[in-house]
Amino acid sequence: MTTHDVEIAIVGAGFSGLGAAIALARTGVDDYVILDRGRDFGGTWRDNTYPGAACDVASNLYSYSFAPNPRWSRSYSHQPEIHRYINAVADEYDVRPKARFDTEVIEARWDEDAARWVVDTLTDGDENTYRARHLVGAVGPLCEPTLPDIDGIDSFGGTIMHSARWNDEVDVTGKRVAVIGTGASAIQIVPELAAIAGHLDVYQRTAPWIVPRTERPYTRAEHWMYKHLPAVQTASRAGIYVFNEFVAFGMTYSPAALKPVEILARANIFRGVRDPQLRARVTPHFQIGCKRILRSNAWYPALDRDNVDVITDPIERITETGIVTADGTAHDVDILVVATGFHVTDSPVFSRIAGVGGRSLAQVWGETGMQGYKGSFVHGFPNMMLMIGPSTGLGHTSMVYMIESQLKYLADYIATARARNAQRVEVTAQAQDRYNSGIQHKLRNSVWVNGGCASWYKDAKGNITTLWPGFTFDFRRETKKFDTAAYDIVGADAVTATPAAPATVGA
Image (cartoon, rainbow, N blue to C red; front, side, top):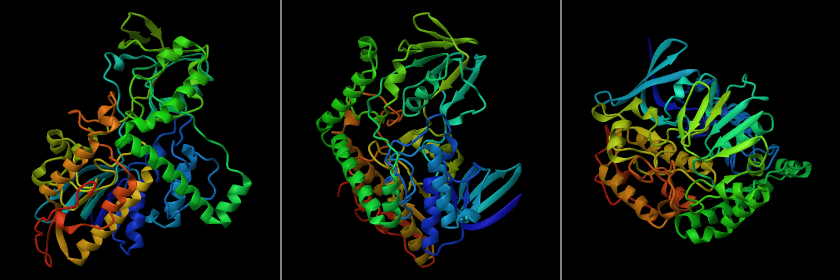
């Protein structure tokens, strides 16, 4: 086993981990390492290779503002292109030498005496330990697939694949295929499979709201302007951003304002499905925006195909040969595709991070729910900043905007710790409690609370701990500067801060 001393260990090499590395490098910090279990940069855009994988945020907004891409091929980018973009940015900013790929983080634990994080890793069978002054958790929420808790799922004799662990060697042509789930991944997978499968069953527990996907190829003229007149692409990005923020207003403050979006979604159903009975089955019974609003032009026509059945009867069990529904019907299946999402509020990663007293994030959040301060710091976990932490998720626009807001906070945090020669930086319990009370107060009138749906936005206690309530520019204002009054800072040249009234959400 080899031990490495570094100032900062970044766990994760997706949009947020790469962004963290670039933010540090741009401020002159070079003593850091990036740890990731994958083969290169990309995170979820590296791992999700299922047919039809694409982004539902417009290309010009789903990218770093400091690294615009004038070569996007389409108005909405697909997985291979986003993966290439992320790696191209890594090379542009020369951070690849700092990355340790194919490296699994086994455990990260806080050493109070040394005031360091001890990160144990495994790379090709070799054990390594990194002792870091600061830990940046950049493991995104959509990284640990969840399998449905269905009786007999382990007994299935055919091929089973989770959407996030796709096996390209499996040929579905002419096969009997079942897809469990109707979320963001499923609506992209199903049209692709429906075109080549012999028969496709789609198991729907809850019908999603889906609006048209305004995707088109960029023209040669647009590519020329984006390259030679970058202000044009900047203006496009700004326009997309502003439009999306109107949706945020409806979701958080006035759900009635989302009625035009609902009308658009209902028209999408009417246009794509001929059968009135099928239309009724695929029409949601909750307020639009309560669950993630999806985008597709192909989902409803795929469900309307003669070789596709939408099954709404609950699954009772899975057998060696297929699926048995609650009405007693046995459905034979060759290939089972599980598109049931990810462990978001209960990620296995949480059990691998142990803070003060050896208590893991899983233990702490199991008692309190997933809470933090500005989506970045958690009381009891000194010198650790999370990217895309609690209450930072979005249902209307680009997560890259939120990530970039946190990058500013990260850079200021490290600069502050360096300037004060700080050995230990921990958000106070008072600041964290005050902040989370503000979050819940702002959620009280939101569609997520009052829209009549269940979703992964909520934790096991029914609390909404994943979403940012309101406009994203408010979050950027919140994270503009590292607010030392909310933290206990201990070091050779620092004093323990007396917690003043820290900024609260909406203040």
